[in-house]
Image (cartoon, rainbow, N blue to C red; front, side, top):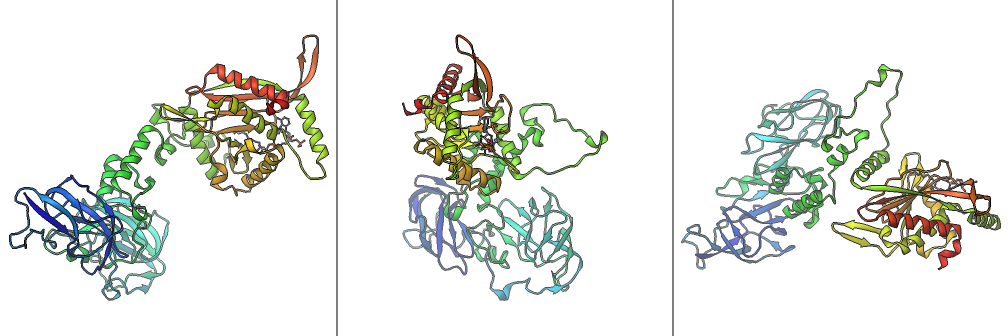
Length: 561
Ligand code: CAO
Protein backbone atom coordinates (compact mmCIF):
# COMPACT_ATOMS: atom_id res chain seq x y z
CA UNK A 1 0.00 0.00 0.00
CA UNK A 2 1.35 3.39 -0.91
CA UNK A 3 0.09 6.83 -0.09
CA UNK A 4 -0.65 8.83 -3.24
CA UNK A 5 -1.52 12.48 -3.61
CA UNK A 6 -3.92 13.08 -6.46
CA UNK A 7 -3.36 16.48 -8.00
CA UNK A 8 -5.22 18.67 -10.42
CA UNK A 9 -3.79 17.66 -13.79
CA UNK A 10 -2.97 19.87 -16.74
CA UNK A 11 -6.11 21.88 -17.28
CA UNK A 12 -4.78 23.74 -20.22
CA UNK A 13 -5.33 27.46 -20.40
CA UNK A 14 -7.38 27.61 -17.27
CA UNK A 15 -5.63 29.30 -14.40
CA UNK A 16 -7.69 28.93 -11.30
CA UNK A 17 -10.88 26.95 -11.10
CA UNK A 18 -13.37 26.67 -8.26
CA UNK A 19 -14.30 23.38 -6.64
CA UNK A 20 -18.07 23.09 -7.10
CA UNK A 21 -18.70 19.47 -6.21
CA UNK A 22 -17.05 16.82 -4.04
CA UNK A 23 -17.91 13.43 -5.46
CA UNK A 24 -16.20 11.20 -2.90
CA UNK A 25 -15.69 11.20 0.84
CA UNK A 26 -13.04 9.91 3.23
CA UNK A 27 -13.18 6.12 3.39
CA UNK A 28 -14.58 5.71 -0.15
CA UNK A 29 -12.89 3.18 -2.38
CA UNK A 30 -12.30 4.73 -5.77
CA UNK A 31 -11.32 3.21 -9.06
CA UNK A 32 -8.74 4.63 -11.43
CA UNK A 33 -10.40 7.34 -13.54
CA UNK A 34 -13.34 7.67 -11.19
CA UNK A 35 -14.35 11.32 -10.89
CA UNK A 36 -13.33 12.86 -7.58
CA UNK A 37 -14.36 16.50 -7.75
CA UNK A 38 -15.90 18.89 -10.24
CA UNK A 39 -14.21 22.20 -10.87
CA UNK A 40 -15.48 25.16 -12.78
CA UNK A 41 -14.12 28.38 -14.21
CA UNK A 42 -16.04 31.06 -16.03
CA UNK A 43 -15.48 29.10 -19.22
CA UNK A 44 -15.53 25.44 -18.40
CA UNK A 45 -16.42 22.82 -15.90
CA UNK A 46 -14.61 19.55 -15.51
CA UNK A 47 -14.59 16.44 -13.47
CA UNK A 48 -11.18 15.62 -12.05
CA UNK A 49 -10.74 11.87 -11.99
CA UNK A 50 -8.43 9.76 -9.92
CA UNK A 51 -5.21 8.64 -11.51
CA UNK A 52 -5.17 5.51 -9.41
CA UNK A 53 -7.41 3.11 -7.55
CA UNK A 54 -7.42 3.23 -3.77
CA UNK A 55 -9.12 4.33 -0.59
CA UNK A 56 -9.64 8.03 0.14
CA UNK A 57 -7.67 8.96 3.23
CA UNK A 58 -7.98 12.72 3.22
CA UNK A 59 -9.70 15.31 1.06
CA UNK A 60 -7.55 18.39 0.67
CA UNK A 61 -10.11 20.71 -0.92
CA UNK A 62 -13.51 21.98 0.05
CA UNK A 63 -16.40 23.50 -1.88
CA UNK A 64 -15.55 26.96 -3.14
CA UNK A 65 -11.76 26.44 -2.95
CA UNK A 66 -9.78 27.72 -5.92
CA UNK A 67 -7.39 25.15 -7.39
CA UNK A 68 -5.00 24.99 -10.31
CA UNK A 69 -2.71 22.52 -11.99
CA UNK A 70 -0.72 20.68 -9.34
CA UNK A 71 -3.06 21.47 -6.43
CA UNK A 72 -3.50 18.40 -4.25
CA UNK A 73 -7.10 17.19 -4.41
CA UNK A 74 -6.91 14.29 -2.02
CA UNK A 75 -4.72 11.63 -0.52
CA UNK A 76 -5.32 8.00 -1.42
CA UNK A 77 -4.03 4.76 -0.07
CA UNK A 78 -3.32 3.24 -3.45
CA UNK A 79 -4.48 -0.27 -4.17
CA UNK A 80 -2.07 -2.87 -5.58
CA UNK A 81 0.45 -1.79 -8.13
CA UNK A 82 -1.50 1.13 -9.47
CA UNK A 83 0.79 3.68 -7.91
CA UNK A 84 2.81 6.49 -9.28
CA UNK A 85 5.94 5.71 -11.23
CA UNK A 86 9.05 5.13 -9.21
CA UNK A 87 10.59 8.17 -10.79
CA UNK A 88 8.21 10.31 -8.81
CA UNK A 89 9.72 12.01 -5.79
CA UNK A 90 8.98 10.62 -2.38
CA UNK A 91 6.39 10.63 -1.06
CA UNK A 92 5.11 9.09 -4.22
CA UNK A 93 2.75 11.30 -6.14
CA UNK A 94 0.33 10.37 -8.84
CA UNK A 95 1.40 11.82 -12.13
CA UNK A 96 -1.03 14.63 -12.72
CA UNK A 97 -1.09 14.90 -16.45
CA UNK A 98 -2.34 11.50 -17.56
CA UNK A 99 -5.54 11.82 -15.69
CA UNK A 100 -8.36 12.35 -18.15
CA UNK A 101 -10.41 15.45 -17.66
CA UNK A 102 -14.03 15.93 -18.58
CA UNK A 103 -14.53 19.44 -19.79
CA UNK A 104 -17.61 21.51 -20.23
CA UNK A 105 -17.74 24.15 -22.92
CA UNK A 106 -14.55 26.03 -23.31
CA UNK A 107 -14.61 29.29 -25.10
CA UNK A 108 -12.05 29.48 -27.81
CA UNK A 109 -10.10 32.63 -28.45
CA UNK A 110 -11.82 34.50 -31.24
CA UNK A 111 -9.01 33.64 -33.58
CA UNK A 112 -9.55 29.92 -33.24
CA UNK A 113 -13.25 30.02 -33.85
CA UNK A 114 -13.99 28.08 -36.96
CA UNK A 115 -17.43 29.43 -37.50
CA UNK A 116 -16.95 33.14 -37.54
CA UNK A 117 -17.58 33.74 -41.24
CA UNK A 118 -21.17 33.83 -42.31
CA UNK A 119 -22.94 35.25 -45.31
CA UNK A 120 -26.49 36.34 -45.97
CA UNK A 121 -28.42 33.70 -47.81
CA UNK A 122 -31.82 32.15 -48.26
CA UNK A 123 -33.05 28.78 -49.47
CA UNK A 124 -32.57 25.33 -47.99
CA UNK A 125 -29.54 24.88 -45.74
CA UNK A 126 -28.35 21.54 -44.44
CA UNK A 127 -27.13 21.55 -40.86
CA UNK A 128 -24.87 18.64 -40.12
CA UNK A 129 -23.07 17.22 -37.11
CA UNK A 130 -19.85 19.21 -36.84
CA UNK A 131 -16.44 18.02 -35.75
CA UNK A 132 -17.07 16.36 -32.41
CA UNK A 133 -13.57 15.11 -31.96
CA UNK A 134 -13.05 11.47 -31.21
CA UNK A 135 -16.69 10.83 -30.52
CA UNK A 136 -18.35 8.27 -32.74
CA UNK A 137 -21.88 6.95 -32.86
CA UNK A 138 -23.24 9.41 -30.35
CA UNK A 139 -26.91 8.97 -29.55
CA UNK A 140 -29.50 11.67 -30.12
CA UNK A 141 -31.06 12.11 -26.69
CA UNK A 142 -33.05 15.30 -27.16
CA UNK A 143 -34.68 17.16 -30.04
CA UNK A 144 -34.69 20.83 -29.11
CA UNK A 145 -36.63 22.15 -32.11
CA UNK A 146 -39.57 21.04 -34.22
CA UNK A 147 -40.60 21.56 -37.82
CA UNK A 148 -41.81 25.11 -38.31
CA UNK A 149 -39.64 26.57 -35.52
CA UNK A 150 -37.64 29.65 -36.34
CA UNK A 151 -34.09 29.18 -35.10
CA UNK A 152 -31.31 31.66 -34.57
CA UNK A 153 -27.66 31.18 -35.43
CA UNK A 154 -26.05 28.98 -32.77
CA UNK A 155 -29.38 27.96 -31.30
CA UNK A 156 -29.12 24.35 -30.16
CA UNK A 157 -30.96 21.88 -32.36
CA UNK A 158 -30.37 18.52 -30.75
CA UNK A 159 -28.47 17.03 -27.84
CA UNK A 160 -26.23 14.07 -28.42
CA UNK A 161 -24.55 11.95 -25.84
CA UNK A 162 -21.92 9.25 -25.68
CA UNK A 163 -21.11 7.32 -22.52
CA UNK A 164 -18.63 10.05 -21.65
CA UNK A 165 -20.04 13.32 -22.84
CA UNK A 166 -23.14 15.16 -23.85
CA UNK A 167 -23.22 18.00 -26.33
CA UNK A 168 -25.68 20.29 -27.97
CA UNK A 169 -25.43 20.65 -31.70
CA UNK A 170 -26.22 24.23 -32.65
CA UNK A 171 -27.41 25.65 -35.90
CA UNK A 172 -24.87 27.25 -38.18
CA UNK A 173 -27.52 29.46 -39.66
CA UNK A 174 -30.75 31.25 -38.87
CA UNK A 175 -33.90 30.02 -40.54
CA UNK A 176 -37.05 28.00 -40.29
CA UNK A 177 -36.85 24.26 -39.62
CA UNK A 178 -38.19 22.46 -42.69
CA UNK A 179 -37.21 18.91 -41.90
CA UNK A 180 -35.61 17.08 -39.00
CA UNK A 181 -33.42 14.27 -40.23
CA UNK A 182 -32.75 12.53 -36.93
CA UNK A 183 -34.96 11.05 -34.27
CA UNK A 184 -34.47 10.19 -30.62
CA UNK A 185 -32.19 7.20 -30.21
CA UNK A 186 -30.48 7.60 -33.60
CA UNK A 187 -26.72 7.47 -33.49
CA UNK A 188 -24.89 10.13 -35.44
CA UNK A 189 -21.35 10.94 -36.51
CA UNK A 190 -19.53 13.90 -37.89
CA UNK A 191 -21.13 15.10 -41.11
CA UNK A 192 -24.53 13.46 -40.54
CA UNK A 193 -27.47 15.59 -41.57
CA UNK A 194 -29.39 16.97 -38.60
CA UNK A 195 -31.98 19.37 -40.01
CA UNK A 196 -32.82 21.19 -43.19
CA UNK A 197 -33.53 24.85 -42.69
CA UNK A 198 -35.07 27.41 -44.94
CA UNK A 199 -32.25 29.90 -44.42
CA UNK A 200 -33.35 33.42 -43.71
CA UNK A 201 -30.40 35.35 -42.48
CA UNK A 202 -26.85 34.39 -41.64
CA UNK A 203 -25.80 31.13 -43.20
CA UNK A 204 -22.70 29.02 -43.06
CA UNK A 205 -20.10 30.07 -45.61
CA UNK A 206 -20.19 28.21 -48.87
CA UNK A 207 -16.56 27.34 -48.36
CA UNK A 208 -17.55 25.02 -45.57
CA UNK A 209 -18.35 21.65 -47.05
CA UNK A 210 -21.54 20.20 -45.74
CA UNK A 211 -19.81 16.95 -45.00
CA UNK A 212 -17.20 18.56 -42.80
CA UNK A 213 -18.97 21.30 -40.93
CA UNK A 214 -17.12 23.42 -38.48
CA UNK A 215 -20.08 24.70 -36.58
CA UNK A 216 -19.22 25.23 -32.96
CA UNK A 217 -20.39 22.60 -30.58
CA UNK A 218 -21.73 23.39 -27.19
CA UNK A 219 -20.56 20.55 -25.08
CA UNK A 220 -21.25 19.41 -21.62
CA UNK A 221 -18.46 17.47 -20.00
CA UNK A 222 -16.30 15.83 -22.59
CA UNK A 223 -13.84 13.23 -21.49
CA UNK A 224 -10.48 13.56 -23.11
CA UNK A 225 -8.63 10.58 -24.46
CA UNK A 226 -6.90 8.81 -21.62
CA UNK A 227 -3.48 9.70 -22.90
CA UNK A 228 -1.57 11.74 -22.34
CA UNK A 229 -2.64 15.35 -22.22
CA UNK A 230 -5.94 16.84 -21.22
CA UNK A 231 -5.78 19.61 -23.71
CA UNK A 232 -6.59 17.36 -26.63
CA UNK A 233 -9.90 16.65 -25.00
CA UNK A 234 -10.60 20.30 -24.78
CA UNK A 235 -9.62 21.07 -28.33
CA UNK A 236 -12.49 18.87 -29.40
CA UNK A 237 -14.80 21.51 -28.11
CA UNK A 238 -12.82 24.70 -28.35
CA UNK A 239 -14.97 26.50 -30.87
CA UNK A 240 -17.71 27.01 -28.43
CA UNK A 241 -19.74 30.13 -27.95
CA UNK A 242 -19.59 31.52 -24.46
CA UNK A 243 -22.32 30.55 -22.09
CA UNK A 244 -22.65 31.12 -18.43
CA UNK A 245 -21.14 28.14 -16.72
CA UNK A 246 -23.23 27.03 -13.85
CA UNK A 247 -26.35 27.92 -15.70
CA UNK A 248 -28.08 25.19 -17.62
CA UNK A 249 -26.76 24.91 -21.15
CA UNK A 250 -29.57 26.37 -23.19
CA UNK A 251 -32.37 24.76 -21.28
CA UNK A 252 -30.47 21.59 -20.43
CA UNK A 253 -30.27 21.02 -16.71
CA UNK A 254 -26.82 21.62 -15.29
CA UNK A 255 -25.42 18.19 -14.52
CA UNK A 256 -22.46 16.04 -15.41
CA UNK A 257 -22.79 13.22 -17.97
CA UNK A 258 -22.52 10.66 -15.22
CA UNK A 259 -25.44 12.24 -13.39
CA UNK A 260 -27.37 12.45 -16.67
CA UNK A 261 -26.72 8.79 -17.31
CA UNK A 262 -27.78 7.92 -13.78
CA UNK A 263 -30.99 9.95 -14.18
CA UNK A 264 -31.73 8.29 -17.50
CA UNK A 265 -31.26 4.84 -16.02
CA UNK A 266 -33.81 5.68 -13.35
CA UNK A 267 -36.12 7.40 -15.81
CA UNK A 268 -35.80 10.67 -13.90
CA UNK A 269 -36.63 13.82 -15.91
CA UNK A 270 -33.58 15.88 -15.05
CA UNK A 271 -35.23 19.18 -15.89
CA UNK A 272 -37.65 18.60 -13.00
CA UNK A 273 -34.87 18.01 -10.47
CA UNK A 274 -33.76 20.92 -8.33
CA UNK A 275 -29.97 21.13 -8.17
CA UNK A 276 -28.46 21.55 -4.72
CA UNK A 277 -24.92 21.99 -5.95
CA UNK A 278 -23.17 25.25 -6.50
CA UNK A 279 -25.05 27.39 -9.04
CA UNK A 280 -27.89 24.89 -9.08
CA UNK A 281 -25.82 21.99 -10.35
CA UNK A 282 -27.72 18.71 -10.11
CA UNK A 283 -25.85 16.05 -8.17
CA UNK A 284 -26.38 12.33 -7.97
CA UNK A 285 -27.96 12.70 -4.55
CA UNK A 286 -30.45 15.27 -5.98
CA UNK A 287 -31.52 12.61 -8.46
CA UNK A 288 -31.79 10.07 -5.66
CA UNK A 289 -33.91 12.31 -3.44
CA UNK A 290 -36.14 13.25 -6.40
CA UNK A 291 -36.66 9.53 -7.01
CA UNK A 292 -37.50 8.99 -3.34
CA UNK A 293 -40.05 11.86 -3.45
CA UNK A 294 -41.73 10.41 -6.52
CA UNK A 295 -41.83 6.94 -4.98
CA UNK A 296 -43.37 8.28 -1.77
CA UNK A 297 -45.97 10.19 -3.76
CA UNK A 298 -44.78 13.56 -2.44
CA UNK A 299 -43.84 14.65 -5.95
CA UNK A 300 -45.33 13.85 -9.29
CA UNK A 301 -43.44 14.14 -12.53
CA UNK A 302 -44.94 16.41 -15.18
CA UNK A 303 -45.40 13.40 -17.44
CA UNK A 304 -47.26 11.51 -14.74
CA UNK A 305 -49.43 14.53 -14.00
CA UNK A 306 -50.25 14.87 -17.68
CA UNK A 307 -51.04 11.17 -17.90
CA UNK A 308 -53.29 11.39 -14.89
CA UNK A 309 -55.32 14.17 -16.38
CA UNK A 310 -57.81 11.62 -17.70
CA UNK A 311 -60.65 13.67 -19.08
CA UNK A 312 -58.23 16.46 -19.81
CA UNK A 313 -56.32 14.35 -22.28
CA UNK A 314 -54.64 11.44 -20.42
CA UNK A 315 -55.71 7.96 -21.33
CA UNK A 316 -55.93 6.51 -17.81
CA UNK A 317 -53.63 3.65 -18.81
CA UNK A 318 -51.44 4.30 -15.79
CA UNK A 319 -54.45 3.45 -13.62
CA UNK A 320 -55.21 0.28 -15.53
CA UNK A 321 -58.38 1.81 -16.95
CA UNK A 322 -59.85 1.18 -20.35
CA UNK A 323 -58.85 3.86 -22.87
CA UNK A 324 -60.59 7.23 -22.88
CA UNK A 325 -63.27 7.19 -25.61
CA UNK A 326 -62.06 8.79 -28.79
CA UNK A 327 -64.96 10.21 -30.70
CA UNK A 328 -65.04 12.13 -33.93
CA UNK A 329 -67.54 14.68 -32.68
CA UNK A 330 -67.65 16.39 -36.05
CA UNK A 331 -69.48 13.34 -37.36
CA UNK A 332 -72.50 14.35 -35.33
CA UNK A 333 -72.58 18.10 -35.95
CA UNK A 334 -70.51 21.26 -36.18
CA UNK A 335 -67.81 21.67 -33.56
CA UNK A 336 -65.16 24.16 -32.50
CA UNK A 337 -61.91 23.11 -30.80
CA UNK A 338 -60.42 25.48 -28.23
CA UNK A 339 -57.27 24.89 -26.19
CA UNK A 340 -57.89 24.96 -22.44
CA UNK A 341 -56.29 27.79 -20.48
CA UNK A 342 -53.03 27.11 -18.67
CA UNK A 343 -54.81 27.51 -15.33
CA UNK A 344 -57.45 24.96 -16.32
CA UNK A 345 -54.78 22.48 -17.36
CA UNK A 346 -52.84 22.90 -14.13
CA UNK A 347 -55.87 22.84 -11.85
CA UNK A 348 -57.31 19.91 -13.82
CA UNK A 349 -54.24 17.80 -13.14
CA UNK A 350 -54.32 18.73 -9.45
CA UNK A 351 -58.03 18.07 -9.09
CA UNK A 352 -57.74 14.68 -10.73
CA UNK A 353 -54.85 13.66 -8.49
CA UNK A 354 -56.78 14.80 -5.42
CA UNK A 355 -59.99 13.09 -6.54
CA UNK A 356 -58.17 9.82 -7.16
CA UNK A 357 -55.75 9.76 -4.26
CA UNK A 358 -57.91 11.03 -1.41
CA UNK A 359 -60.56 8.73 0.09
CA UNK A 360 -62.99 11.64 0.33
CA UNK A 361 -66.44 11.70 1.88
CA UNK A 362 -68.89 14.60 1.86
CA UNK A 363 -71.30 15.42 4.72
CA UNK A 364 -74.17 17.79 4.06
CA UNK A 365 -75.88 19.95 6.64
CA UNK A 366 -77.86 23.20 6.90
CA UNK A 367 -77.12 26.23 9.03
CA UNK A 368 -79.86 28.58 10.13
CA UNK A 369 -78.41 31.99 9.21
CA UNK A 370 -81.63 34.01 9.66
CA UNK A 371 -80.16 36.15 12.44
CA UNK A 372 -76.71 36.36 10.90
CA UNK A 373 -78.14 37.51 7.58
CA UNK A 374 -80.18 40.18 9.38
CA UNK A 375 -77.00 41.33 11.11
CA UNK A 376 -75.07 41.30 7.81
CA UNK A 377 -77.74 43.39 6.06
CA UNK A 378 -77.78 45.84 8.98
CA UNK A 379 -73.98 46.08 9.03
CA UNK A 380 -73.87 46.77 5.31
CA UNK A 381 -76.54 49.45 5.68
CA UNK A 382 -74.66 51.14 8.53
CA UNK A 383 -71.41 51.10 6.56
CA UNK A 384 -72.80 51.87 3.15
CA UNK A 385 -71.35 55.39 3.13
CA UNK A 386 -67.89 54.02 3.92
CA UNK A 387 -68.24 51.78 0.86
CA UNK A 388 -68.00 48.62 2.96
CA UNK A 389 -69.95 45.56 1.84
CA UNK A 390 -69.73 42.28 3.65
CA UNK A 391 -70.91 39.01 2.12
CA UNK A 392 -71.74 35.80 3.95
CA UNK A 393 -68.38 34.37 2.91
CA UNK A 394 -66.46 36.65 5.30
CA UNK A 395 -68.57 35.36 8.22
CA UNK A 396 -68.08 31.81 6.98
CA UNK A 397 -64.31 32.23 7.04
CA UNK A 398 -64.42 33.44 10.61
CA UNK A 399 -66.84 30.67 11.63
CA UNK A 400 -64.63 28.04 9.99
CA UNK A 401 -61.60 29.28 11.93
CA UNK A 402 -63.55 28.72 15.17
CA UNK A 403 -64.50 25.18 14.03
CA UNK A 404 -60.92 24.43 12.96
CA UNK A 405 -59.69 25.50 16.40
CA UNK A 406 -62.17 23.16 18.04
CA UNK A 407 -61.39 20.27 15.63
CA UNK A 408 -57.69 20.73 14.81
CA UNK A 409 -57.38 17.65 12.58
CA UNK A 410 -59.36 19.60 9.97
CA UNK A 411 -56.46 22.09 9.94
CA UNK A 412 -53.81 19.41 9.49
CA UNK A 413 -51.93 17.72 6.66
CA UNK A 414 -50.66 14.20 6.18
CA UNK A 415 -46.90 13.70 6.21
CA UNK A 416 -46.22 10.02 5.69
CA UNK A 417 -47.56 8.30 8.79
CA UNK A 418 -47.69 11.56 10.76
CA UNK A 419 -50.08 14.48 10.89
CA UNK A 420 -48.86 18.06 10.79
CA UNK A 421 -51.13 20.21 12.94
CA UNK A 422 -50.85 23.78 11.77
CA UNK A 423 -51.13 26.45 14.41
CA UNK A 424 -52.05 29.10 11.90
CA UNK A 425 -55.32 29.55 10.06
CA UNK A 426 -54.88 30.46 6.40
CA UNK A 427 -58.21 30.08 4.61
CA UNK A 428 -58.33 29.62 0.85
CA UNK A 429 -61.45 30.55 -1.07
CA UNK A 430 -62.28 29.34 -4.56
CA UNK A 431 -62.67 32.19 -7.01
CA UNK A 432 -64.30 31.79 -10.38
CA UNK A 433 -62.21 33.65 -12.99
CA UNK A 434 -62.42 33.92 -16.78
CA UNK A 435 -59.37 31.64 -16.99
CA UNK A 436 -60.64 29.05 -14.56
CA UNK A 437 -60.68 28.26 -10.88
CA UNK A 438 -58.16 29.97 -8.59
CA UNK A 439 -57.77 29.77 -4.83
CA UNK A 440 -56.43 32.92 -3.17
CA UNK A 441 -55.63 32.65 0.52
CA UNK A 442 -56.60 34.88 3.46
CA UNK A 443 -53.60 34.53 5.72
CA UNK A 444 -54.01 34.48 9.53
CA UNK A 445 -57.79 34.74 9.29
CA UNK A 446 -57.98 34.11 13.05
CA UNK A 447 -56.28 37.45 13.69
CA UNK A 448 -58.50 39.46 11.35
CA UNK A 449 -61.92 41.00 11.75
CA UNK A 450 -64.85 40.56 9.36
CA UNK A 451 -64.25 43.91 7.63
CA UNK A 452 -60.56 43.19 7.05
CA UNK A 453 -61.32 39.70 5.74
CA UNK A 454 -64.01 41.15 3.48
CA UNK A 455 -61.71 43.83 2.08
CA UNK A 456 -58.86 41.36 1.49
CA UNK A 457 -61.26 38.93 -0.14
CA UNK A 458 -62.46 41.61 -2.54
CA UNK A 459 -58.88 42.58 -3.43
CA UNK A 460 -57.72 39.00 -3.90
CA UNK A 461 -60.81 38.05 -5.95
CA UNK A 462 -60.19 41.03 -8.23
CA UNK A 463 -56.53 40.09 -8.63
CA UNK A 464 -57.59 36.52 -9.41
CA UNK A 465 -59.98 37.69 -12.12
CA UNK A 466 -57.33 40.02 -13.57
CA UNK A 467 -54.78 37.17 -13.57
CA UNK A 468 -52.54 39.11 -11.19
CA UNK A 469 -52.38 36.81 -8.17
CA UNK A 470 -48.84 36.07 -7.02
CA UNK A 471 -47.88 32.49 -6.09
CA UNK A 472 -47.54 33.67 -2.46
CA UNK A 473 -51.16 34.83 -2.49
CA UNK A 474 -52.26 31.35 -3.51
CA UNK A 475 -50.15 29.27 -1.17
CA UNK A 476 -50.16 28.14 2.42
CA UNK A 477 -53.90 27.49 2.85
CA UNK A 478 -54.82 25.19 5.71
CA UNK A 479 -58.52 24.85 4.77
CA UNK A 480 -60.56 25.99 1.78
CA UNK A 481 -64.09 27.27 1.26
CA UNK A 482 -65.78 27.03 -2.10
CA UNK A 483 -68.85 29.26 -2.15
CA UNK A 484 -71.40 29.07 -4.92
CA UNK A 485 -73.77 31.12 -2.77
CA UNK A 486 -73.75 34.05 -5.16
CA UNK A 487 -74.80 31.76 -7.99
CA UNK A 488 -77.23 29.14 -6.73
CA UNK A 489 -77.61 25.43 -6.18
CA UNK A 490 -78.34 23.35 -3.14
CA UNK A 491 -75.45 20.99 -2.36
CA UNK A 492 -72.32 19.81 -4.14
CA UNK A 493 -69.24 17.71 -3.40
CA UNK A 494 -66.11 19.87 -3.54
CA UNK A 495 -62.72 18.23 -4.11
CA UNK A 496 -60.14 18.63 -1.36
CA UNK A 497 -57.27 20.96 -2.16
CA UNK A 498 -54.33 18.73 -1.15
CA UNK A 499 -52.36 18.73 1.08
CA UNK A 500 -55.31 20.12 3.02
CA UNK A 501 -57.62 17.49 4.47
CA UNK A 502 -61.02 19.15 4.19
CA UNK A 503 -62.97 21.69 2.19
CA UNK A 504 -66.30 23.37 2.81
CA UNK A 505 -68.72 23.86 -0.06
CA UNK A 506 -71.46 26.44 0.42
CA UNK A 507 -74.54 27.00 -1.73
CA UNK A 508 -77.23 29.64 -1.87
CA UNK A 509 -79.31 30.20 1.25
CA UNK A 510 -83.04 29.83 0.88
CA UNK A 511 -85.97 30.37 3.17
CA UNK A 512 -87.25 27.01 4.43
CA UNK A 513 -90.06 25.97 6.75
CA UNK A 514 -88.31 24.82 9.93
CA UNK A 515 -90.22 23.06 12.71
CA UNK A 516 -89.57 24.74 16.07
CA UNK A 517 -91.47 22.14 18.12
CA UNK A 518 -94.76 23.90 17.81
CA UNK A 519 -94.98 25.26 14.32
CA UNK A 520 -93.09 25.68 11.08
CA UNK A 521 -91.11 28.90 11.01
CA UNK A 522 -89.67 30.55 7.91
CA UNK A 523 -85.90 30.38 8.42
CA UNK A 524 -83.01 31.28 6.12
CA UNK A 525 -81.05 28.06 5.67
CA UNK A 526 -77.53 27.85 4.31
CA UNK A 527 -76.57 24.51 2.69
CA UNK A 528 -73.14 23.27 3.80
CA UNK A 529 -71.16 20.46 2.12
CA UNK A 530 -68.03 19.37 3.97
CA UNK A 531 -65.66 17.05 2.09
CA UNK A 532 -63.00 15.40 4.25
CA UNK A 533 -60.12 12.99 3.92
CA UNK A 534 -61.11 9.71 5.54
CA UNK A 535 -57.46 8.85 6.23
CA UNK A 536 -57.34 11.72 8.70
CA UNK A 537 -60.91 12.41 9.74
CA UNK A 538 -63.78 10.07 10.53
CA UNK A 539 -67.48 10.52 9.89
CA UNK A 540 -68.36 11.35 13.49
CA UNK A 541 -65.81 14.19 13.60
CA UNK A 542 -67.10 15.51 10.29
CA UNK A 543 -70.68 15.49 11.56
CA UNK A 544 -69.54 17.28 14.75
CA UNK A 545 -67.62 19.85 12.72
CA UNK A 546 -70.72 20.63 10.65
CA UNK A 547 -72.99 20.79 13.68
CA UNK A 548 -70.60 23.14 15.46
CA UNK A 549 -70.18 25.29 12.35
CA UNK A 550 -73.97 25.52 12.01
CA UNK A 551 -74.26 26.49 15.69
CA UNK A 552 -71.78 29.32 15.21
CA UNK A 553 -73.52 30.54 12.08
CA UNK A 554 -76.82 30.27 13.96
CA UNK A 555 -75.52 32.39 16.81
CA UNK A 556 -72.32 34.19 15.87
CA UNK A 557 -71.67 35.23 19.48
CA UNK A 558 -70.26 31.71 19.91
CA UNK A 559 -67.17 32.82 17.95
CA UNK A 560 -66.20 34.78 21.06
CA UNK A 561 -66.32 31.74 23.33
N1 CAO B 1 -76.59 32.67 -0.14
C1 CAO B 1 -77.28 33.68 -0.69
N2 CAO B 1 -76.71 34.74 -1.28
C2 CAO B 1 -75.36 34.75 -1.31
C3 CAO B 1 -74.58 33.75 -0.75
C4 CAO B 1 -75.26 32.66 -0.14
N3 CAO B 1 -74.60 31.65 0.40
N4 CAO B 1 -73.29 34.05 -0.94
C5 CAO B 1 -73.25 35.21 -1.59
N5 CAO B 1 -74.50 35.63 -1.82
C6 CAO B 1 -74.89 36.85 -2.48
C7 CAO B 1 -74.06 38.01 -2.01
O1 CAO B 1 -74.58 38.54 -0.83
C8 CAO B 1 -74.17 38.92 -3.19
O2 CAO B 1 -75.45 39.52 -3.12
P1 CAO B 1 -75.71 41.02 -3.64
O3 CAO B 1 -75.25 41.06 -5.03
O4 CAO B 1 -77.17 41.18 -3.46
O5 CAO B 1 -74.94 41.88 -2.75
C9 CAO B 1 -74.16 37.98 -4.38
O6 CAO B 1 -74.57 36.73 -3.86
C10 CAO B 1 -72.86 37.84 -5.07
O7 CAO B 1 -71.85 37.49 -4.15
P2 CAO B 1 -70.34 37.29 -4.64
O8 CAO B 1 -70.22 35.98 -5.27
O9 CAO B 1 -69.97 38.45 -5.44
O10 CAO B 1 -69.50 37.39 -3.33
P3 CAO B 1 -69.03 36.26 -2.35
O11 CAO B 1 -68.27 36.96 -1.30
O12 CAO B 1 -70.12 35.40 -1.87
O13 CAO B 1 -68.03 35.37 -3.19
C11 CAO B 1 -66.20 34.82 -4.60
C12 CAO B 1 -66.82 35.86 -3.69
C13 CAO B 1 -64.92 35.33 -5.15
C14 CAO B 1 -65.93 33.56 -3.79
C15 CAO B 1 -67.24 34.50 -5.69
O14 CAO B 1 -67.46 35.63 -6.49
C16 CAO B 1 -66.87 33.34 -6.56
O15 CAO B 1 -65.98 33.43 -7.42
N6 CAO B 1 -67.55 32.24 -6.34
C17 CAO B 1 -67.38 31.02 -7.18
C18 CAO B 1 -66.54 30.02 -6.44
C19 CAO B 1 -66.46 28.76 -7.24
O16 CAO B 1 -66.31 28.78 -8.44
N7 CAO B 1 -66.57 27.62 -6.56
C20 CAO B 1 -66.60 26.35 -7.22
C21 CAO B 1 -65.28 25.73 -7.09
S1 CAO B 1 -65.31 24.12 -7.69
O17 CAO B 1 -65.30 24.38 -9.26
